[in-house]
Image: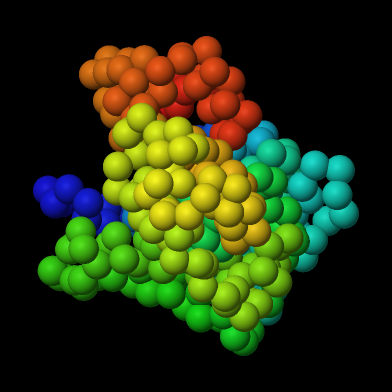
Length: 326
């Protein structure tokens, strides 16, 4: 039995299309799977490691296949180790994935794999959307108001793309290591974070230049002082005057400094931190163990109607939907 927080490994080998579809659905998505090549050669080999916010797998089918699935709701990366495949997302142009170009799937587009070559062996990585967006905000040091737009493919022959692909593959090789590092929750958690950060530096997207740009100047001491206090005690009954007192500057000076260095007002920052704490607790809660109202009050939201509206605007779903999906 795996220790809580440790990586979980699974392996499947089958010549049945139905069993293949069922195994993929357990770890990834329900999909349409069609044998396009020699049916006698069809043989699925699937190895999977669950790393929390990421599911890393290696799959091959032994013959040419086609597949498709609806909006996955997750980011997804495909890295061919052998062979090739062509993927069409929504109404976009087909994109070729090879041993030189990895594929990046949008969570809100229907996916169709028109060609999966008989010799194709692909590392497939399913990535939790909320976890990736949170990691982007951590790297940027500020909230992200617009969901990043990713290019459909990226270079895996050099630089961060190659490093990321090799790290994802290493996690699968650990299944054969008795008492290996990924059996440790500490190492598993660090690998999970590294892969989340790494794909943001490896793939091409609308925030890539901001991530690779020189670090911005240090925030003024007054701003940092307020941010530190709010992150430490977000549920306190703050108002603008209270925050100015913490900063030891005038209210107007604090507001101008926050807008310049954080991109929002001091009270908007308070609400942002509280919303993130609420979301984190809702996602970690067992359904039936708590209520949205209880969690919202716990993190300083006194008006449930305004809280629910802000939450939906921020995360694109209601807090009750987050709790039900926990």
